Figure 1: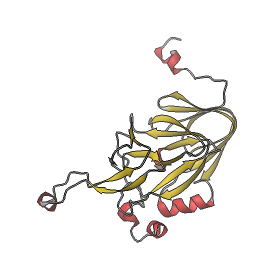
Figure 2: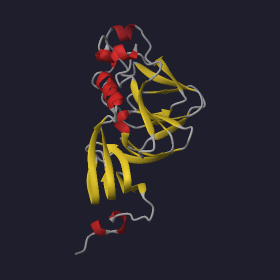
Figure 3: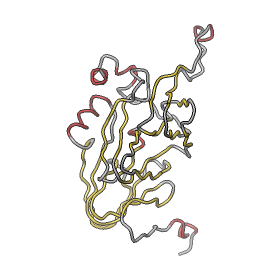
Figure 4: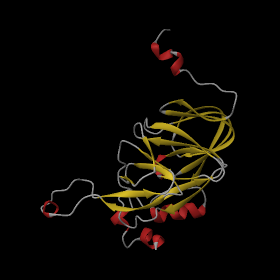
Length: 239
């Protein structure tokens, strides 16, 4: 049988080392020898002896926070030996290696998989209050290990060496050490009163030393975030 489909670039990538690697730009391959954490429902294929266990958001505390905030990562634990392939609606997949002392704040919808050696928690995005339609809580990862994140299209990595402003729905992840805040991008005036809007009412501001990853697409508003949280349990937790 002959076809360009069977070209080398489409064949399974082999390696002698266990762990996460890119099968291609849209698919993650985990050569599993032990355990790993992944987004529930992200598995597209696997080979070998692998077990899948649903974990909610990864513990009672995180599950409780997710229910209050609408944020978090619905997780499954992969255990055993074999090859597992993960994807998320053909989004681009990127690998990030965290070293001791690193901390990364990630939009929960962008987390695909991570080593079980990493720690993560759901924390409030400082300075955003009730104003962000993208959600005011993020997943913060720390420790030593590898994490796979997804972006809708090829991202840009901004080095925060000057005042930096990002649409909160396009922000994928950033250095957890950065200071975040709220910045009004749209100037109020007669046009605003007449219903003329730019579509850029406000942005997130970043200051300090670090980076911000921005995708060329805006995530839809998270249910239970922004104004929908006002007076709800999300607001109570934020207080």
